[in-house]
Image (tube, rainbow, N blue to C red; front, side, top):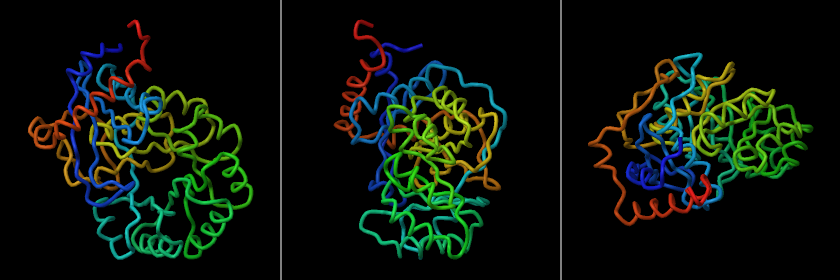
Length: 323
């Protein structure tokens, strides 16, 4: 069921969530939450995305609010700790927000930082967590990624390199030249053909995110068409979006790796009281925002209008104009 534009706007709540640390260059995360007959959905496409890219995120939010979730195979999901590009001295404080997590994803290749910064951060994580994966967000060339893989594995293995290079051809070349597994993220969620990277033999693992792919059902459809393991991850979601990610992970027939769904710990405040992981896992279930928190965290009027205008721009890309 696709609601009318007016129904969608009537159920829209725009919030601004303060972050503990800068992440993806932002300190406040704005999202539009959608209240509907099936529950709550989240539309949180990053502000730099145009309507064509943001429309899938809106479709995901509508699905969460207007469609019942799929059957699930598990009631708890193991999650990884997420370590932003912070100085090594701050790593232990970040990891403390992920009690029991035995896997950590570490951001690397941050603009303005050096490989030495990445090495120091990863080594600090290794002192606390046994399994380490790194995420470069496409920030390296093939040669830079080869060097990074070599120096980052001096003191232990890496579970995988997530999106070390920007293009599928680069990922395929890198995969042929190093032994560290390659995970694809942007090459799936930002591609016209999300299956192309798998067909090209350019990835060992697929990182799938609910919102950019258009919803839980779209994610599960993609997962069913590929023959490599899937890691469900967050797109810096609020608690509402995290719940959708947990549902998607729970609905997968197999789940071999910890998922990147613990990013709620990066927020100072959220629309619900977010429980810390227990033994490195989060429970699967729906989330209903606290009305008082919705009010306290509501975005300024001009930002709410910006999101309303954005919904109006994306909506025609979801349904026929005559609808």
